[in-house]
Length: 174
Image (cartoon, rainbow, N blue to C red; front, side, top):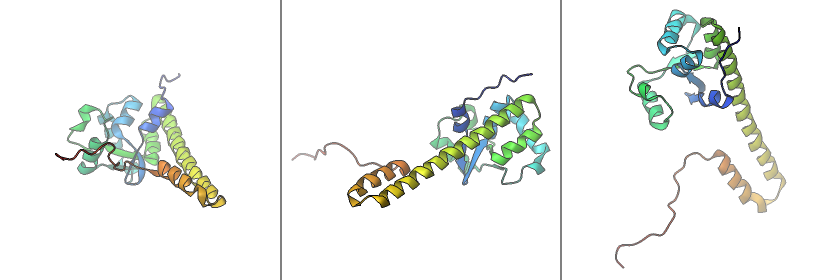
């Protein structure tokens, strides 16, 4: 019996977040992928709690959840003000879910999610390789290209830094 579950690779990767220095997926996203209600997924986890140590799964603090809601607009509106914070599952926690959720759909979803984590690791690794190649080129060529290499490095590693204002300054009445 074939599963009708098809998860686009980009969708899988965009449901993986970085939190507490780990790549995680939230219970509501996993429940959605598995075709379950979030409460059912949480029930199964509670019944098998010993399978989910702190490095496999953890519950977000209220502050972490509020910060995520503030900075990320792709969470469902009905979850934003829910009194219970979500569970976050690391890659190992997602793998452990396959032993708890035993349906055909759960198996197919777990395979897709594991592939998403691999894709994410490959993307991170390719970015490291790019930085390493730039470093090699920087050492190879003389200082006339230093400005170019610094600009490229800033583009790769730049985060949301405040930018300088652009335009004319109009003073009061002069």
